[in-house]
Image (cartoon, rainbow, N blue to C red; front, top):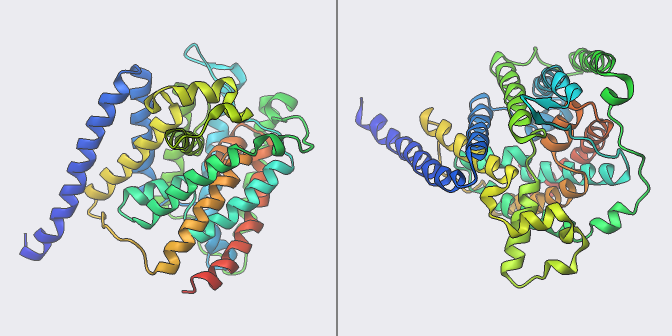
Length: 374
């Protein structure tokens, strides 16, 4: 191997070694919580590796769509959701997988979701990534995403303090088509809608060829791993609850009293706050996602530490993370927890989420051009 190539390969080996070392440390901590948590860590690592290897993103795909530069990224997402709809349906219809109870990601399709998704869309464009994207891009060495993640955590915790006010807004009862119409009919209708959207996007001005084989493979892999997460966790893949929890733990260390918040005195939230972070399903999977992306980038020779193109871009990432954190908390999740997992569960709130996030993304692009012009 030439000297220059060898010199360039050293950081990649170092990234791979670091990923292995951190995986051993995290696995050791997680092992105290049992084999189920170790399995979830492994699923998270596989998700991170699949996201990085297929360059599967949400924010970038929406930006290309809105700028008329192609629709293949969004169409790959439709393939992912369609595959997950088919895979999730038998498990959700039965209510269990291998004896473990499973539930879908179902929430009210109300103003709270629309407002949160719209705000999240703005944040996605400012930060240049979504919830899962910020994790796997940070794992690939982009330190600007660490900034976005830090403010994402802050925004998520901030929103948790306002959940009573948001929850008081009028909202319909949660509706899952699988429960309302029966699972065969719900799956058929949803697949027809997704197919129609795929075909429609192919006719958009500036639309490119069908999604690349790499992204389609990534979409199918992510859908399959989403089923694995459902089976082991008991609920679909989610990302942003962990950020809210990390913010709560940090605030508590700084002297905040959780008894002052109705949200944090509720059973699940208070138990998570009082327990180890390695006992939280979403946190463990998020840790795994970063480690999987770090390992994949090192293995493929794509790891590169970099901060960002400019101070303005870093400031935009910070503001974007804050907006995404607040929006995701009040909208019951991000692209993964609300859109992907919600639609795959046939919940109408998942469709409302993407319908509100795209206009927010359009606004976010215009704000970004003023804040950090290319």
